[in-house]
Image (cartoon, rainbow, N blue to C red):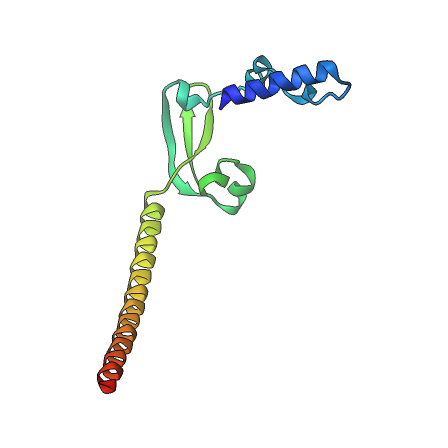
Length: 140
């Protein structure tokens, strides 16, 4: 795949040398593609020892407006590192378990609905096959 891309860029470059139509100016070089990555600082709990000040709790309305971390899961825990005290997003075990059981309930409900549909469809097909056999026997 990359060979095809390089071939197209090469042909485009040759084309632009012989014509005034410049198509390839917007194609970045390989060295330019790799240097556009933005480095973000790692959080303190990934670099050093930390302790959890407040366990994973649901975000209040105020915390949702103040802390960016609340936007990911709706839960936040307070973490104290040696350098500072900060918040990080977390997942609540109770909420995950509730979501799991809701999902299981929906799956069972859908399964029951489709089982009923299959039973009615099978009865309809059996009835049609029986009528077809009766018609064929009646013609004899």
